[in-house]
Length: 480
Image (tube, rainbow, N blue to C red; front, top):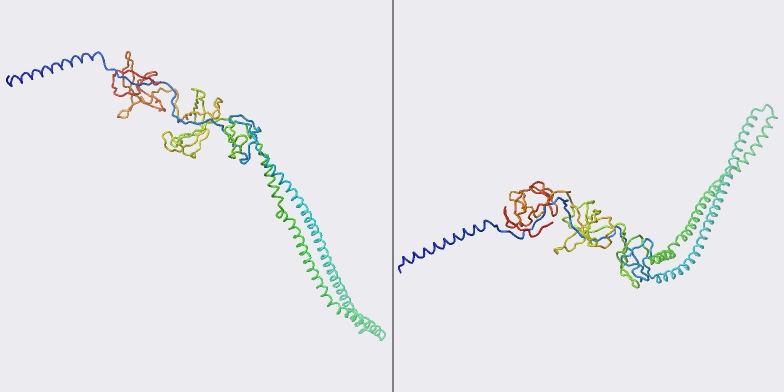
């Protein structure tokens, strides 16, 4: 066969193949016109009118708002234990009793020794007190005698000066009288008068001379009286000083008893032992529940904090908040408390305390060492008991009765506009329809719709995948 014939046959086969492919495409196209491809595994949510909220989730245990740690004697054996964890107690109830026999023996021995020491101290004190009283009397007597001697010396001096001054006055008076007699003598008119004047002058002169002689003797004696007074003054001052020294020595002896006697130390030790013996009977300081117990009957406590009582009349939940959330929380915020013990019921609470100092680091769920801040939630519902584990939602913000869609249903376009895929019923399946929306308040799982062709109970897609306008879809699940 020629090469030309072979080539012609090859071209015919190629043309035939193309015709067959074209016919197959036309047939397939006609078959698909009556049935579109149904997309499976598409999840959806429901458009709802509901309350939206932003919140922080934490966990915590129920405890009493007021708790008291009870202390005891860590070195003594527990002879009686009347409570266990979970027991309710009243103020004044005897919680436990420590064996106080060893302390009582110490008290009795020290008390006996103290009694002897106190007797000796009392005897010594009596002697010292009598010496002090005697020193006071001796001081008074010494000062009185010295004062009397001074008074006598002053009296003798004053009398001597009085006598001397009296004689000076007499001497001056005699001299005036002598001058008068001399004047009479000079003016006498006859001899008889002159003789009488001479005789009188002679008598007066004799008296004057005698008195002058006495004055001459007494004047030097005045100095001795002055010296006697000075000596009496010095003797008085010395007596006062010596008497004061004697009294002070006696007073110092009495005052020094508190330093030389150990009875005060023994008394203080007895007081401490008495208190410890009394504290061996441990009583509840308040009404509440035993939430911690660190002792057992018949054993010595390993710690001074033997138990804890929590006030069950006012309960709280304490939880830890991450540092990234703590600044969003303020006192008074609403909280929702749930617990396995009460099923699906929600208990309302409020943030009552925020501890702004971070607590010790703890391992987070991801394994990272993180700090937390303690937050206290108060509530009044009595169904929760001390020790129960709870979950808490702290409501940061909320909006009531608003139309909303699941957060995952909202899609942001390149230009920033928002839209959702609405699932429109189409027989047994649904058709995807793009709906442009505007959003408002954003909760943790739902977002408010402020505009858009949506109404309550509409379904919107939450996992869209490769969906376009008019796609036929089958909803696998529905997130209610």
